[in-house]
Image: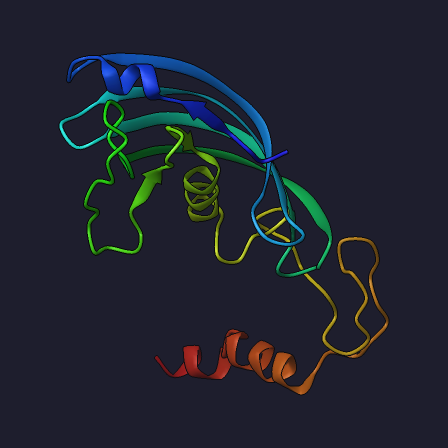
Length: 178
């Protein structure tokens, strides 16, 4: 689960511009508790430096609503484009120089390109910072903690809500003066 690996040795032996296409259908862990089922297609293109991976993915992730704290399924759609650089030359086995950038994705010394981390990062970027089960989710009662999607609580309105209601009421006296 969550190990999307492709042996690219043959593709690296072919000329620049050679391509391969692969289907992806796997479950990834986005963090310690959040799973994401992803499906899609990736195109691998041999470049001068390594392998350019382009893909379009769809899937679902089980998230927690930021208002009511209920679990819900969130549909994902995202595209990725990343270049993976080989650690060793495919013909000689000699080590290759790498960029100083620690975020560079690499192809290991056995010529295995692991898409798992790149797809995980792009999936995380496709998730909203404050996911909601629905746009009009009322959330939890700030006083008793009741889930307002499931029940109405009997708590009196807080003083802040009463003040807000008072400020938003039409002022009949002010209208008469105009």
